Amino acid sequence: MAGPMRIRAKLNGDKTTVRVLMSHEMESGQRKDSSGKLIPAHFIQDVSASLNGKVVMTAEWGPAVSKNPFMQFEVKGAAKGDKISVSWKDNKGDSRTDETTVS
Amino acid sequence: MKLIRKNVVALVVLALAAGQAMAQKSASDSIAEYRAMLQDGNPAELFEMHGEELWKQKRGPKNASLEQCDLGKGAGVVKGAFVELPRFFADTGRVQDLESRLLTCMQTLQGIDTSSVSTRTFGKGETANITALATWIAAESRGQRMNLPQDHAKERVMYEVGKRLFFQRGGTHDFSCATCHSSEGKRIRLQDLPDLTKNPGDGIGFAAWPAYRVGNGQMWSMQHRINDCYRQQRFPEPKFGSDATIALGVYMGVNAKGAESIAPAIKR
Image (cartoon, rainbow over all chains, first blue to last red; front, side):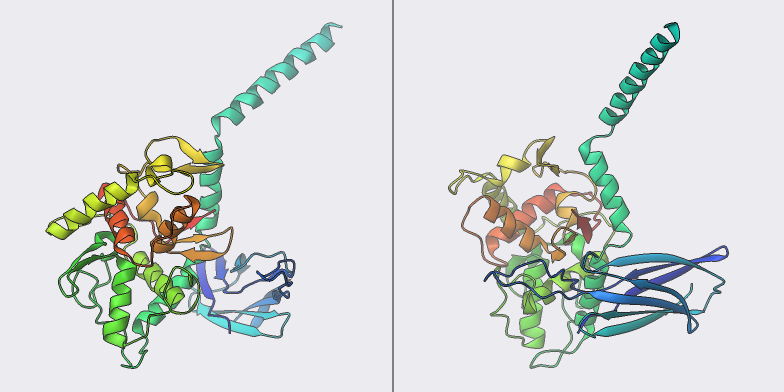
């Protein structure tokens, strides 16, 4: 089970900068373990972010994204106290959603 | 004909200018830039979160948290503890670094079986938990200046022992720590090697670990760092939390007095 995300959302003028750190192995499927066996790919495939429940960004990721990935985006129209939630789903069906308030 | 010659001259001037601009920016400048870019999203924060949780969580046979753990500034005081470690602890009668102290607290307060904690289990089980705890505790003192005590006789002895170990040559390559870390301007490939026989400056060397290593996606504590230095020297590797590793910590930490701690840092 993956650990929680670290999400920060900061209002700056009319834009809110959202920075997200995700805890995930992001195994590429190209590496071998010490006994020479291929380590199966395990990576985040779908990412979505919403503002007060409305989806504002989606992304499709692949095995080339690094371990413990960092993502940053800007969203317009958010106010202080609004809820930003981020979700991901990986290729094994695991998923996680975390949320924060805009500050 | 004249026009062409003019153009050629202009091109040569441009090439020279480009060459100079490139010479001004050294490899280490570029690496520093790269690190600054990464610093904003340092995954060490994920380990910090986990470490804080572990500190407050009731665990082990005694079902206790670590909130009464004395890191040198009194039971439960975390802020400022990192920049004064390793130090002497009266209850154990020895000088301890952050990680060996956490080991003590896990044993005495929580009753956790720490026999699995070793240099062979970095990144796994309780050894990983200690690294996460150390990451959070270090973060609580970020921006403070290294200020290791040298009041107790044992702390001064550990400094002298650390100094000797630092210069002790051995292994198949006849290496010592000092081989790489006792003069300025040395590097391995593109990595600058700090001079640890004196204060290497803010956020360098002892004041930068624990650190997240981007290359392998691992969080490394000072114990892990020292252990890997010995592995690279082809020395027999010291045990986790052994007096040898702590003495080296005292030596580097005292030398770094006044340097700002940026731990947990991010490394290539």
